[in-house]
Length: 274
Ligand SMILES: [Zn+2]
Image 1 (tube, rainbow, N blue to C red):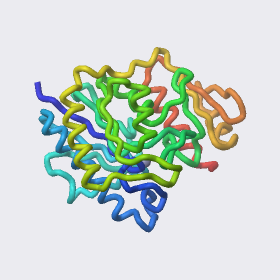
Image 2 (image 1 turned 180 degrees about the vertical axis):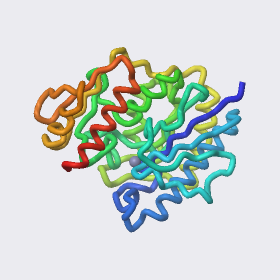
Image 3 (image 1 turned 90 degrees about the vertical axis):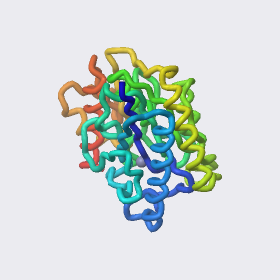
Image 4 (image 1 turned 90 degrees about the horizontal axis):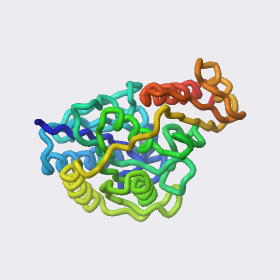
């Protein structure tokens, strides 16, 4: 059977990038930063093909989700671009895929890593899944598990990769920078980082049968703590959403995708009162 690999590419975890000037669309250093992001994506694409993938789909998963430079992307891969889209950072993933690779990921909100946040720095203080704080990999792992697909690799700073191992002990990682503060890191050079990502991507897809999907207990409860109470005031208007305290709401479902989509929508709505 043909083996399809899925690569979700974020930006904050790319080597050399540590600030909003790098990862924000209007940032002064954004244009060269998106080139580095594209080169790390290419490294992972190459590793996935070297490891036996017959097909690779890349999903641009940062901000507007319009960052990867198509003319520089490995022509063997297809790329999903733009937002909003169902499943967001996991858009297009289904049970035809054999492995998910997370490239350029960052630490969850409230942890000491480069540009730590969970989905939105403006709106989200914390997200819990069944009572445990999770970052974007944790949220996306639930979607991957919905389709029976394991997350086999995460690349990013030292805090992001440590959090990945905490959730999935057998995962492969590529630590491309060591976080010193929220806005400072000791980085591998771009070429060293790309070589590490290529190698680890190959190893990760080769090991995919040994890595289990993250199965959250069902029904699943997603708890969302906002930055400001006005955001919870709006979220509470949605049927099925429970208000737990001034800043916090939750949603419970026996369908992980439904719960994820609800939380994703509440974060988008929060933007209206930010
Ligand atoms: Zn991002």
